[in-house]
Length: 192
Image 1 (spheres, helix red, strand yellow):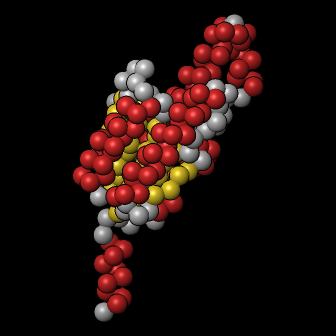
Image 2 (image 1 turned 180 degrees about the vertical axis):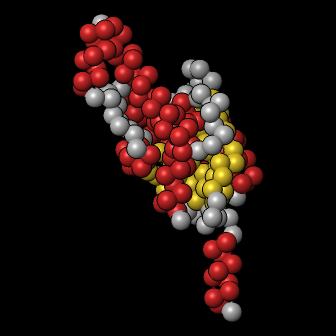
Image 3 (image 1 turned 45 degrees about the horizontal axis):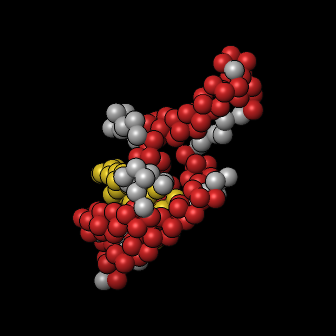
């Protein structure tokens, strides 16, 4: 009887949410997985109003995030860790946002954790922009334009890789959604 219960549990689908946040938005991917199939069942993005206060951003998280979590009742949620950049103001804002997201998620799901950026990027096969690429772009386009190209490449590479791994997402062009899809994709291996 216990063996039957264990086997039944293994066949029940697990719902996993991957979250990518920034100072401008909150993007989520929702996966359903059993031990035979994985489905990306939804993507959601909430944008913070330009120049919104911290209180306004946290209020949007308070009102929008629980709706998604309640709708899907996830078994696990994985949130991208904050990265510390050269702007102390942006780092502070991201820390508040990610901390608040973490707290709200814990109210509705017991299995909430964060993931370092390079952990999920390595999992999908992401390769950093190389010095050789940067130098080639400098020669072709000049230094200022080369920096723009490198920044765009960093964003586009995740989308290119994920479109090779998951069917039906070719029309998704939003970089934040694509990052959340990649975070959720990594989470599938972390959770199951």
